[in-house]
Image 1 (tube, rainbow, N blue to C red):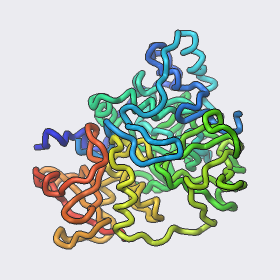
Image 2: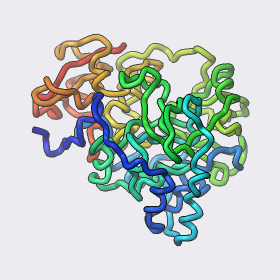
Image 3: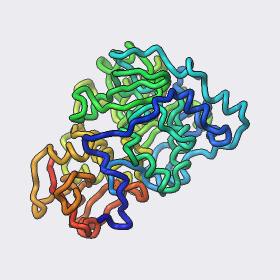
Image 4: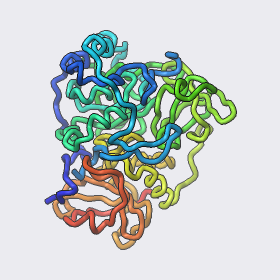
Length: 422
């Protein structure tokens, strides 16, 4: 059984069967979306949330987002996830058609085997092309508007739909490297580097609108020969110029752990290279600068808890790995990655790595796992042990990142062991 306050959206984060989509091109999906249902910010070049492409263009389950708030603070300021982001007004059919490009515009010249980079704040990977609903339009465009997408999914059922049949796989942040493994019209199947999974040694697989990717040999070089700016705020605004009125200067709201090459600096500002060949600026207070090969200081378990606690109140999002929403294992994977510790992307593989820990020996920063029934079935959830008998986790589509008593959460006795990665 599952507690009424802890519904399962499906046992996603284990290696298994995935939903099979209709194989529709994104243009076909767009054609089925009523004009009134497409948010004005879905593909417009506004600065409300994810912004234009770049400054150059001058269920206890493993995945879902929480209903109420965006956690932590960023340079843009924080608001609740159920109300965060700019409001988008309605528009007529002509304007909607203009926002959804023709199929040719949605399919860059990417071939199987090509290396590309994510060209939107956060790209969401689907298990097959053509599965999206009208309310998912803000996540399919370039630029994306993840705050609008969150607003579109204020109802738990809309979020649970994403996990039913595992429609989503994972997400990839701006500038992340991917390898193209298949094409289907306006969609590209890719593997995301840096998200280990037994499903593919190259990275985590999934389908993404090809328009959200860009090829850039120069950006690839800059990632290997320049210092790197890593976003340490929960989210941070990329701007066109180093000095200009903030409201008119913003382009893209980036997520925690987004990593970009450094190409310049001004007092309080860091210039960064962008995947499409442009340049943008970040507030120096929102990033840390690392040399090539430099790793963050080795974290303590309490460091892990402190970093994860910055996202308290952030709504769960199935497949989420960003400051706009996490699933349970995306949360643990991202928090550890922020400290230079790479662990598997999903809870099942996470439960088989590290060092086993007895429940009586738990320390802050350990990962604790849950399986059903009775803690001996397939692992379906992971949390960070926070000390004093409490866990820190992103639980399911109806809830937010929270700290709760382990015994209270585990009323169904599904505790399945713990692992230590530090």
